[in-house]
Image 1 (spheres, one colour):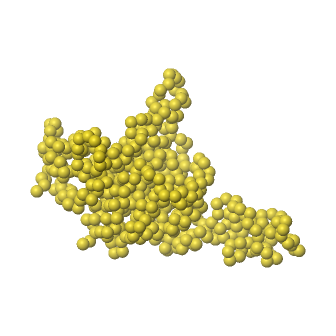
Image 2 (cartoon, one colour; image 1 turned 120 degrees about the horizontal axis):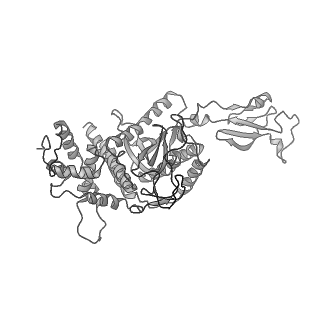
Image 3 (tube, one colour; image 1 turned 180 degrees about the vertical axis):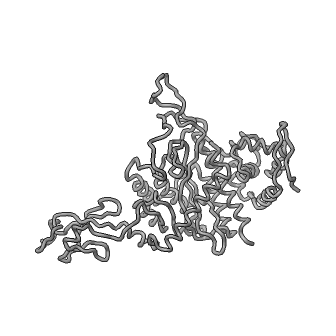
Length: 473
């Protein structure tokens, strides 16, 4: 039987008593958390030399219980486990066999062999903050058209198999637990995915360490950074700049019919803080489709905010077999012609192609900007037949604003009841981000990607195990 409080110490400190109800919840979680099925993926490769390592399932269980308790520091968590036989028993150890902090770090690195584990980076300082922006304002794109180019590149790469990634081991572990959630009824077999990112503040300083001999305060020489992949980003929700990374997640937003919704993460990606959510999205969706292909799971919709409202992402999402439900930057309007074209007697056809007063359809002339198409009189082409009654637009261009038609074409018209109900499910990804905060991951202040990614996946797996207990028998 589990004790109701912890007063056993090894260094003279006194631990606070734990509520008996909390012990009951921990015991119930431990009974459900059977991680033996993950042993093949967590074990060391066969044939590796050296003395036998610690039990990988017990190491994983120790880090999972850290997320359940909400402890941010791995060092403080190991100290707590060593001070209490009850905590050690829950983790699968005895007080004399609790692993060292370095053992847990080595375990996380083995599953995610980060090439930048021991080396820093020498680059120009990122600075502490940029220009002041309005609350909720997004950063303007530094490279216009970058999202469209990334979407086109990922579309081309879909014809080739996925390349090996350093995150493959953690992604496979998460996918294995996700499939178990589907089997247990915690997740449906048809998914409406909510996409978003959240900031992770690094423990490193954004100004770095000087390696030059300059004495001025405004030295622009390169500096050494202990977190080589962290960069300066903008958090529009909290209206602040931060130095670190961005965790991009895909969360199943729709619940199983007749059951409450569980905001469970099914796919992850880690990027520098300055990377736009739309730039990180195509590769993440492609990885998710490849990971769950052939498992009986169907991706139906992708729900996201206005940061994803880009023509390239709309096209990419549709090509991936999903329906995009993205919030617009501005409320879309029905297809309209310019006032000058309307005065010249030009009308829109059924396919949104302008037709002049003489009944001749106009010829396409490209896209002026996203959602605005250009058309011209066919008489401007040398091989076209001349027009006996040229209008005022015979030598000009005709613009058609068709930006609002893509919502109707997707089957989820903007502003309709089905659109409002579907977009309301996007809060699932925000709740998932808050669960990472309650698990102590967002305040950990790590300085390496392998630590961030491993703890993010472990916290996501912990929420899956909790959801198993909420599924009615």
